[in-house]
Image 1: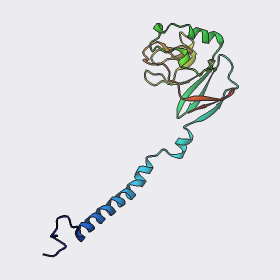
Image 2: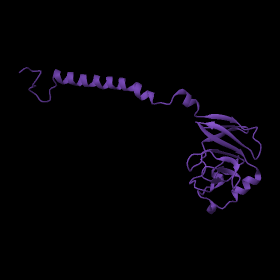
Image 3: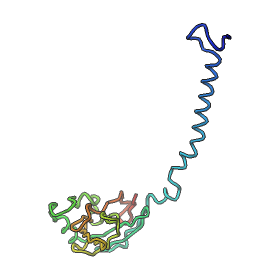
Image 4: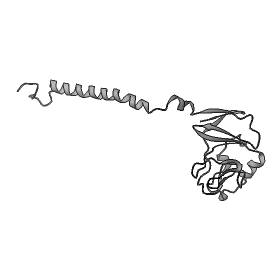
Length: 178
């Protein structure tokens, strides 16, 4: 037999070992190059990335009114609460809530009059009506969930409060959601 097939020294590398290693390495590089377009196609498209954050002018929302905007295909309620509404939700005992959460955890410091929530009922995904229901917050007519002016569920089958999206104030009249 030739030297290329059976080396005398077991630690000696043959040309066959080199060819096997080179072929394996080239196969791995080729597989990675072929897989990259597939992996890259799983990234969000440009239109989805553009929708990931929106800026909203809130200067025209009067106290007591709610503005609805669309963010990531979902309705978002932006509410300018009056002092009386804020006092009512702040003074609500947490034991009276289905999903206990203080109002201070649902608003930004220094901007307590503005409440921003995702407008989807946490029961079955319906869109609740603003300024309706037993607590004059939101009412989901599909199954009867009632939310207060802090978006906290107070009555009905909804298990959780209305979700608060990530947002920040860019100025006193503009917020960025997302």
